[in-house]
Image (tube, each protein chain N blue to C red):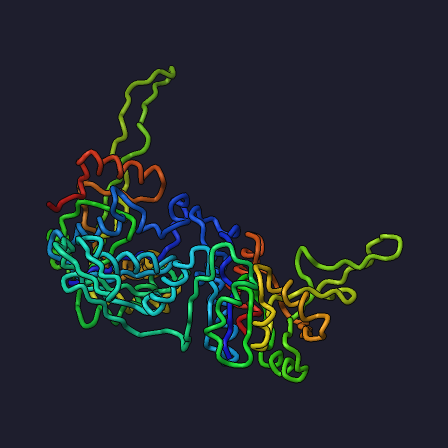
Length: 254
Length: 258
């Protein structure tokens, strides 16, 4: 099953780089976010990726074109202009990088990679979130439910954490790690049937196209994920994730 | 003989530049300081390099993977994916770029490139952030003569502060501008090591200059080659501006090549 990664948004605001880089290329522990996301799918045996690039898509192409060089020790012989690869350490991945336009909305980006999807079911994930969602269970859930689209939902975290507010507006006791009530947010991971392409018309976000066209027909279901999930949108998010990674306790790394 | 260059550190002190690139890739003129260091060895006929990469090592790899193209005129036939290079002025270098980890300390980096040293009895090692006009053949002769496991090049850095002698009434008696000979001798890199060094590196969890050097010194296995000439590290933005100034005025003392 193929995993489509949305990686076309505008320049990252989470790194110090003066020259803009695409958000999914911002590094955590010396590896791009994109790599972390792909590793988390790879852990479930999903090794085929389609990356919807846009802003500085060339940087993403170059990264994967030279990936085996980055992962291995190499010897460059300048007198013959040859490169020898030692201890080749790469991944068993098939990565398709597609330029889906500079200003496209996410729904349109997915519509534009249609020709690369041959199977009945595929996954779409946003390139700026990290999570420990059990992808195989989510796919099983999708099949059981038999709807066109399944959206993973998670508890809001960090700054977006839901507060328990009583009738007069007072904040009740907040228990750490114990989200209140039934507040759920879009975790930006979808399992979709190929039929979904019929509703991906126009330049709108994927979320809007799905809710506008499928919700009423009861074709949009959810998969509730109670584990780790976080967007990585600000410099602070990135530092937090880097600390987890460096401490060897990154939940998304399984 | 192989030359190992340590280029994996984060280089936090020159941070304005090294957020974007690892310190050895910070440029003097339009070439990375790493290139300048390699040119020094190359001028004496040492063309075989092992670069220990770490922080943003992919930038160093990209540079050398494309170096031949940078040093040539190039024709690209885009339709048939053919690339032609003309009039290459690339150096006859063989450069092995090894991933030695993001946070690894120097002793660990050296342990990790042991395979690339192979069976050579002696190799050279230097830091990827310092240039000097060290007489490499004289350094090697000194190493051979002393027969120790390690020889390090030492130098008296230029003094940063003038020395002022003040008499009892508070008047200045004498003023000495930045006296270099009063400075103590410091490690300038440009080392020569025998393969016996590997036995001193422990599990690689330390800086080379910590326990490994302490043990070597205790065993009388370290010799200090006194380099009387030019040496400068590039630790700060100030150092970089100083080196850039020397280079652009055509007076870079480390430029011992044509």
